[in-house]
Image (cartoon, rainbow, N blue to C red; front, side):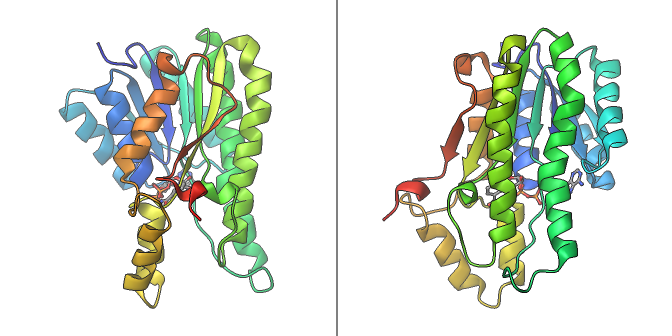
Length: 255
Ligand SMILES: NC(=O)c1ccc[n+]([C@@H]2O[C@H](COP(=O)([O-])OP(=O)(O)OC[C@H]3O[C@@H](n4cnc5c(N)ncnc54)[C@H](O)[C@@H]3O)[C@@H](O)[C@H]2O)c1
């Protein structure tokens, strides 16, 4: 029997690099998954692929910045699978720029998706998870919640907010048997890193920086981040709540 047998998991950003690895692994481990993402064309494709591989999946087009969209995604999940036990907040965007150059619009966009989006998806998922008798929430934070980097202050601010929200929500939801934790990856060989590699003037140099940032000498594969999400969502993590879990190849301890 899979580690997530009996769980129904809503995964935001589920067609992205990290989110899709989590959706596939959760389905393999016996969860029914709701593949939720703003990328409408990829949502149906992913849900179909998971179904074809023997998993249970429902595709839902979701914009985490919109309360009504988050409410509808949760309604669709409970209507289709009868309950909701698990939420993974993986939807996110990257906006870079120095503090004295960044457009207010870019700041508003990244705050809306990464911070307000995490708030709204959680707000609407929590009553359903309470009704199921408990469950788990896994938020995608980052090592960026702890360290600064060139041109990334806005992203850093959003991932710090996600981590702080994790602590607060974990306190509130403990009496309802809902555990809330955060993953803090370093560089992942996935969406945001690929975006940065596409837009930089010197991709080889950036790749070398990304790999050497970790004591293990390489980036994470999205599947390695998914394994950590699986652990936090599973009964194996039954006494873990309000924790940041570093999936960072030693990024944080590198001198
Ligand atoms: N890639 C990395 O190096 C890295 C490192 C640490 C943490 N993370 C975190 O992991 C998460 C996923 O990152 P990724 O690299 O897979 O990026 P990605 O771009 O591949 O995935 C993000 C997904 O979010 C979706 N999305 C964007 N706006 C949305 C909205 N308004 N509503 C719903 N969905 C929306 C996108 O369509 C996309 O599928 C992010 O929260 C990111 O901060 C990534």
